[in-house]
Length: 343
Ligand SMILES: *Cc1c(COP(=O)(O)O)cnc(C)c1O
Image (tube, rainbow, N blue to C red; front, side):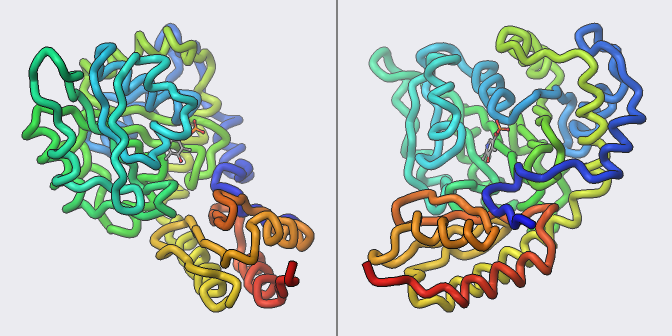
């Protein structure tokens, strides 16, 4: 059996989730008649203290439509330099929205109020108009680091004092919320839009919900059509989302605990230079100069453990719904048994 730690997107729907999908009431969502999609949009919006929600096939499309809805071509968007919206969405911000981008190096993916204030351009004819700040929580390339509620409040206050809009890329927002023990409704007042992925830790096969004000969502809905993201009997996917919101949120803590066990085993290996603090379900670690990431990735694959190299000497592992305690024990034992051969 494979222990697949490449991403929390590799999960298959559980039998109970499939059952919920099979028994979902469906309709054509273009006509607004899919009751399951409507229920998911309303439930997610209410959960996050927002007026309305909109179902998308992917998190990338949800983020890109949010950016498009908040900006005009030529506006500037402030992002953290390692963020998904900037680095891992194929340059979509420039392509779809024609925006100027201000990537800022933060602390493991996080921006501070000071960093945000320092990016605001003077309002005159020469500079692009600084319009929007996008933050990510948890931070993927930050190794699963998260902003606390207080940090999100401070960042939001700083941005809004400058007249900027705030979008939260919440691909893994529930991973942060369960660690913080904060209800999602606390976030609504802090952001103009929040994108929540169902296909990461929540274990759905696909789907993301974008939330915001009723007016924002009405505008975003037109852009979703323009981007080709309008679906028909998408209730079959929304049913998985509803099931996951009810059953797969609190258990994320188990993923974090398993990630910490793997991080702990790694930190005891002399061929590991550093393990980034394991805050949620992502384990990011750097190897010593003598050990290329590919060597360890190949060794682990030969032992039925999959992970990805995120740099020449850096590897990422991600725990999720399909990772069991036995698999973690196998990973730990395999790491202890590894003997790098001198090149
Ligand atoms: C996965 C991810 C997304 C969305 O990715 P899709 O594969 O398009 O659903 C957005 N932001 C972050 C931080 C992610 O990790």
